[in-house]
Length: 512
Ligand SMILES: Cc1cc2nc3c(=O)[nH]c(=O)nc-3n(C[C@H](O)[C@H](O)[C@H](O)COP(=O)(O)OP(=O)(O)OC[C@H]3O[C@@H](n4cnc5c(N)ncnc54)[C@H](O)[C@@H]3O)c2cc1C
Ligand SMILES: NC(=O)c1ccc[n+]([C@@H]2O[C@H](COP(=O)([O-])OP(=O)(O)OC[C@H]3O[C@@H](n4cnc5c(N)ncnc54)[C@H](OP(=O)(O)O)[C@@H]3O)[C@@H](O)[C@H]2O)c1
View 1 (cartoon, rainbow, N blue to C red):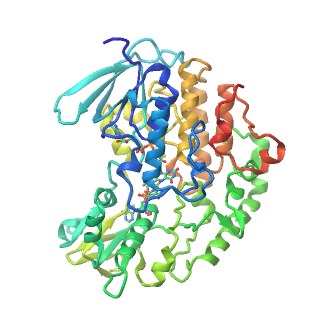
View 2: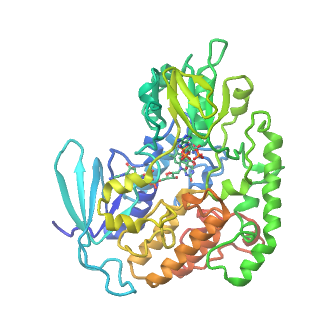
View 3: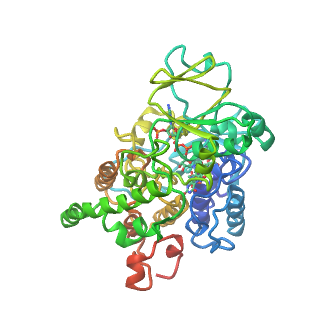
């Protein structure tokens, strides 16, 4: 083959397209299992799915949204159009091989002999990638020096709860589906599924909340049924981005706000400062909790969490409510139950207190199994064992490089307030690493770094498993900038530096 690509990118979602754009001078191959780019925004969205933030927070640094100051949250269709325009503008679609699913990745390189890494592109093939194109049984094997995993944490594989014998969906006479199945339905089919039906939804995060809202809309009027949400863990939900008239960003997205929070590599003095400032953090969290309890009927419906707001924010688990969510609850169209365990009976579901709910339809809004998606591509038990620490979290230096497998970078596995920005800045860093503009530190240093980061996540929130950096995102990006040789503090003056939120536009490439 003429000038074969050295870099494979797996997945054509936001992360894969951002990676392809940044690595474009290496002519990467992007393997995309489906027939389009956009990932979850195409395959995992409901009719009412919107971005959870204003558009200017989910924006490529060199490609502003049209009408970027429009404060409305764009729909999934608008996001797909935006990603498509971006990919077309930077001519990266030519790298994408559609309907090409990576079914296996094998290591064919040599074992590392020293604690230091040289170039990420070693000059030798290191990975063999097995690709199956739609409609074909055969697997084509291609070799690469570097494989960037952008297969996504969500979508594709549903997380299905496990049930004791005789308590699973097989005993239930009604219909059971996961939100992933629901996403594939058109409007007529969803109406048929929900209208006039007793629907029970498991989950109390974004998919569950949006689905309950859609279910309520289908069940208006006296003939309509109530949709019941069954909740395992309560979350702080947020109706909009202001708190007692103050912008939400003031609490977490500025340098001044993040100064209150622990961060990796902070040193002894900063640790002392953070301990001393912990009452201020608690007060900030309490201010938000008091506002949410005041503005939303959380106490009325038994929906006030016992844990601090800060823990949901620090674990990237803070759903934004559809505008009239509690209006529908007040009309009796949405009801709430709590349970830690549950199972099916023939007429519905049974909760841990023995009570039974009748149901025609049960929807599992129970999330996705991103780990299973990776494992399906990487059968080698040795490599799999390197992919996560015993804590269940992925050890990723700068949210990208596994210290023991640097030629397999990951993008899209660290989360923050805007996952587009989080992915894009890491792709910029990765492309400079590939170009040998800087070197990775020693394996030991990278491992220490990742372990410290994980420790901080664990100390900040009991719900830490998502690799969420939302309380120290600016500092994380500072370190990325410094490694790239960029200025870390990017605002025009000190006041803006301290008090205005950081977003992707701050990292638009200027001559440094
Ligand atoms: C419904 C929904 C709404 C969301 N809303 C927000 C939001 O408002 N703000 C925010 O910041 N984040 C949001 N997120 C998180 C979202 O996951 C990220 O913002 C981002 O879109 C993820 O992009 P990605 O490219 O990493 O993954 P994905 O979008 O999952 O893309 C992965 C791609 O890889 C492909 N793929 C997977 N396996 C293979 C394989 N074996 N071979 C080839 N191709 C493969 C898939 O087909 C897919 O196209 C949302 C997630 C969901 C599910
Ligand atoms: N922008 C948008 O509009 C939008 C829409 C949908 C999704 N998203 C994003 O997509 C990602 C996935 O969201 P998601 O809501 O689909 O999944 P999720 O965040 O993983 O939430 C899964 C929900 O199911 C519950 N659950 C899991 N297993 C259960 C079980 N066995 N029994 C009872 N409950 C169980 C979880 O409870 P616990 O909390 O107890 O684990 C949680 O409430 C998130 O990042 C989300 O922000 C965004």
